[in-house]
Structure formats: C-alpha cells, structure tokens
Image (cartoon, rainbow, N blue to C red; front, side, top):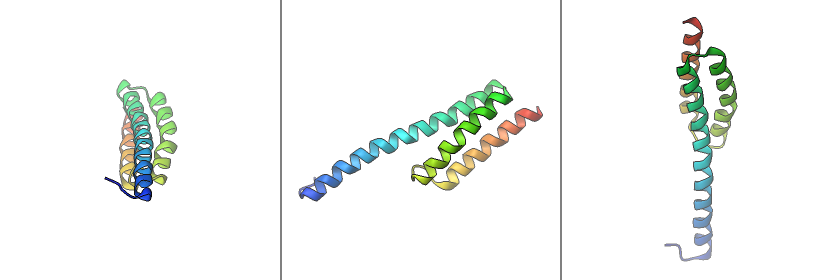
Length: 89
C-alpha cells in the first residue's frame, strides 16, 4: 500500500489511466468487430466503409500506446485481405 503522498498520487493516476486506456482499447476492439461483422454479412461496400472508418482509430491507438504497432498492422492486414476476398467472390 502506498504510504508517501507521491506514491498515493501515483496510485490514483495509475488507476485513472488504466480506466481510460481500457475505454480506448474497448472502443478500438468494437471498431474491429464492426468491420468483421460487415465482412461476414458479405457486403463489400459496407465492409470497406467500416474499414476506412476503423483504420485511423486503430492507428491512433498505436500512437497512444494502447496496442503494439505490429498487432494493429497484423489486424488491418487480415481485415483488408478478407475485404479483398469479398470483392473477388
């Protein structure tokens, strides 16, 4: 348990930041799920639009340190490949 004033303050800040980061992480995952659901529905245009909307959100999560750069790159690549497969099918 934190005893000194600065340790108590740091504990408060850590909890506040944890909640904020959890909110951002949840939002980003929701955007990824929206794209995935549009892909599963089979509509190319809607899937592409959802992906275009999700891309800047995911990129900003990397800049904020919420997700690792390679994780987001991998996710975007996989979603993009699935969308391209929709177009050709």
